[in-house]
Image (tube, rainbow over all chains, first blue to last red; front, top):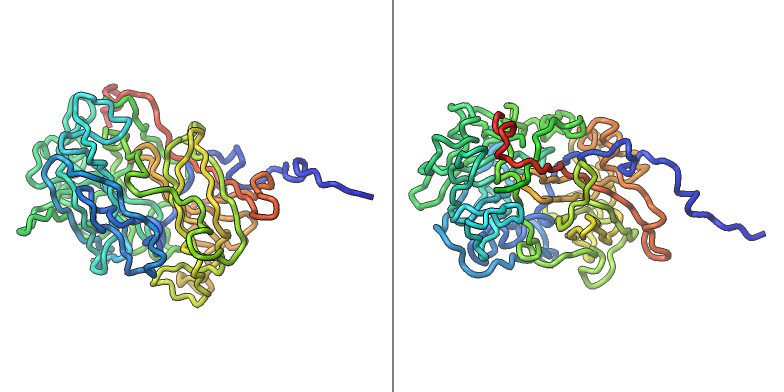
Length: 233
Length: 239
């Protein structure tokens, strides 16, 4: 006698997986692990100004496996071109060579290249996206080339000081660590609504200093005496 | 002014804490201060949206990137990206990376002596459609040992990275496979308590399975939600 399999009834039982409506909610964070270098940072991802190969660690994989293409950013954005860099340290002060840094920022006029920035009176820059990604190098150093951001509004009628939103990812980090980079000579640092939520003694962990070669330098200390201020948003 | 704001809400227990000593690497790398809660400014409610311009084209099939087919069992993974109110999140890039069928990454620092597969890199990216759906083709990754503790093995998993509509909705997670006994003894998965750990477990689905070609798995991803409250409202200012 012929039998048939009714797939509808065979697959209908409730299952303890993420399709269970009783478990619906934010998906948990997990670490990027030590091997993200061929999956996340792409060549050019750390250069928000011109086309270059900044941002990736092609030394960590065979060349034929480097599939991530460079960014298609074209033309030169408006504003002051700056170099950003810093070293990522663990609790013992040891540089971390398997960390990844992401940045998100406004353009020189203070406008975000996002459909949710509705301020048409502030100019978009079609040559500037404002998002970048860099892996740390063998010495634990991240590097970006970008545009110095303009000021953007804060809560109420406040104005935020020029800043770059920044996240840290890596092995041993179950969740990203969001923070911000401000500039030592930035207009409005004293009245910035976010900096003012930070205890005064710790604000310096968010403020990049200009080096003799012009690079804006901000170390990130995941823990320890100079632990960087991280945010919950 | 932006009309969007992401309300600051306490997590429901489904997020791991930064420090989870059973996962040894967290000890030297976790902040000891509590993170400082900040209001959602324009910086946090905005995010990049033009993915092809930033990163190049989509790479939805991880089995056709080299000269021949990779070793292992071909699978299709599909699902929706939703916000915590269940609304679809369109135009979100889902980045994918994983080990090969033997549990080996192509990474230079992976010295576990399982075979490398010259036809598998294990990297892809797809963008969600208007209904928040994504779909990619790959091979089922293998489990692999790691040095966390005696006889430590990572369950088979696929790493997933999403940014969503805003800097505040950023998410990196791992998708696990149903009926894998290693999940319950893995410190990284166990950093998320039950029952929330199950949010990282995909479902085998015969409807997604392609006859004579690939097994199908369904995995929905839920990002932090967003609200329509303008941030000029006073109750948003008094954080």
